Amino acid sequence: MTKKEKAIENIDAFTHFVAGWVSGCAGVLVSHPLDTVKVRLQTQGVSAIQQQYRGTWHCLSETIKNEKVYGLFKGMSSPLLGTALWNAVIFGTYGNTIRWLAGDSLEEQHRMSNVVIASLASGFTQTFVITPLELTKTRLQIQTSQKNQVYKGLIDCCRQIYRQQGFFGLFKGFNATFIRDAIGFTAFFGIFEQFSRWISKEGPPYRDITIVGHVVAGGLTGAISWGCAFPADVIKCRIQVDYDGRYNGFIDCVRKSYKEEGPALFRRGFWPCVLRGFPMNAAIFSIYHYMIRVYEDHDIADRIVTKFLYVD
Image (cartoon, rainbow, N blue to C red):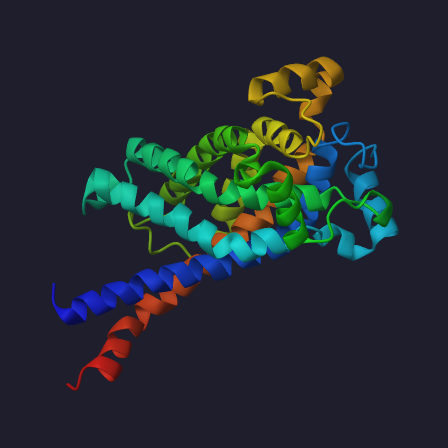
């Protein structure tokens, strides 16, 4: 590989990182209010600091009434700050695993069995990043007033958890997060691959799919994949807001929660979760692919290298 080719490869990698960060931030911004409603409904009955809600609309209206619109954005700083690293890990792991399994063959890269294996790899790897982010986000989201405020903000939340439970306290709910994401990411990448096959007339790498196509395919993919992962997400959230040590792991939380609340446990917060998945992933997929397409169509990497590193 020549010096110029290596420089272009580095710019390519950086561009994908930036596109993932920008699209991830957009996804967080448009979806976080529904995520707050979802988390508050899912974790009712676990922590004494929480207000109780009758359903999605009651939770939404009570949050706005008591905490203004700001209440819907509590805990957003954590995923917003971490989304660059999160997206880099997800798409980096997925892409590298696909290339390791399939080489340069587009047909093999889009074979569904390879998509599933790469999805599981990305789900496992990103668990190390997302668990502390979701732990702090979830604990901040359930604080509904000054009276039940445990943490003053993201930094204070991290500090208190570290002081009380050490470094590994920040990874509370790791196993539950992995179970959720093993299901969620397999559905996520697999369903998006299938939608791409239906929409594209050219086949891999599906460059003929329009921005509207990515909005629809990405949005539906997000909604369906979150629906598949929802039961595991309920357990993950309940474990992460368990201040008193009621649950001894994933299975114990399932057993105790089901015994206390029955099947209704897995309905609370379902619709906010699924509805949230559409705008979040519509934004992520459409913005990410738009940025990459503009970058590739205008040969930006070649222009940068030619202008700043070479005199042709």
